[in-house]
Each structure stands twice: as C-alpha cells, then as structure tokens.
Amino acid sequence: MSSSTPRPLSRPHAPWTVAPHPVDDPVSAGLLREFLVDVADRWYELYEGRSTTPEEIDKHLADMPSDDLAPPHGVFLVAHHGDELAGCAGVRLLDGGRTAELKRMFVRPAKRGLGAAGVLIAAAEAAARELGAGRIVLETRLDLSEARALYARHGYTDVPPFCEGPYSEVWLGKELRDRVGG
Picture 1 (cartoon, helix red, strand yellow):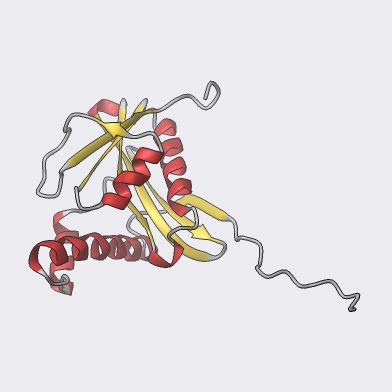
Picture 2: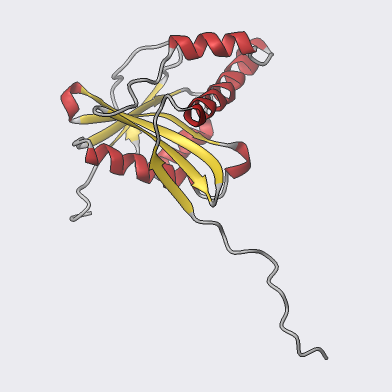
C-alpha cells in the first residue's frame, strides 16, 4: 500500500468576476459580435437553412447599436471565469429610470453550463438597482428556449410587450428587491 495522498481529480473552480466595461472597447465589441453571430445563426438556420454571413452580421451590428449600454443611463458588463473571457450583459434604463432593460446577455459556448448565466443575471440586476430601477425587463425570441427557461428559473415572468421589433416575440420582467430586505 502506498502512503502517498491521491491527487485531486479536478482543479478547484475558477472564480467568476463581472465588472463594467466600456461598450466601445475592442473586448466588448468582440463579445457583442459573438453574441450576434450566436443568436443570428440560430434564426437564419431555423428560417432560412443557413448561417449568417459576415456582411449580415456587420449590418445587424450597425442597425442595432449598443451605445446606450453606457453611463449614465446604462452599463455593459463583462464576465470572466478566472482569467478567461466568459460573457457579457448590458443594462439600460427605460421610462425615465423606473425600469431597466436587460440586453445582449451572452455566455460563450465553452463557458455554458458552469454558472456564468446566473452570475451575469445577478450582476445585471445589481447594476439595474444601482441605476435606480425598481424592475427589470427583457425581450427575446420563441426559438431561444434555453434563454427563456433560464430567465424563468431566475424569477422572470411574462409582461406586456414594451417594445416592437422583428425579433421581439416574448417579453419578461421581474421586480427588483432592495439588497437589504431581500
């Protein structure tokens, strides 16, 4: 028998960090492009049987800018898992500031299933509270079933439509509680 201690089979999980990041920074721009490729490819594959082209992604990025995810009425959050870039989420104020909207929620495929989405949602909700919002809303598509299930697990429920767009099919929201009273 060996008296040596067996080595652990896996390393401890790397810590998650989420912090505001300039939305116009190259890191943010890269994440926003990855987000758009991910959701656009799903739509194009479902409805047109093909992936998006780089030109289509460029056009969508130009047509749907994210510059409103910046102070003083918004924030863009970037998540890391250890030192690896993991995902992003944006928050912007609506209706004079009582309501915040969650936008551009994205977890890189290699980081999915490790808890990043929950960490990003919690950070986005905290950012919405810091911006003064009492509720947070989002819109998504019917085919993004994983996202809809994720939001439901985090307490989001159906709300009346608050925006229009070719990809707006489901509207969800959640009342934000004060940190102190929980």
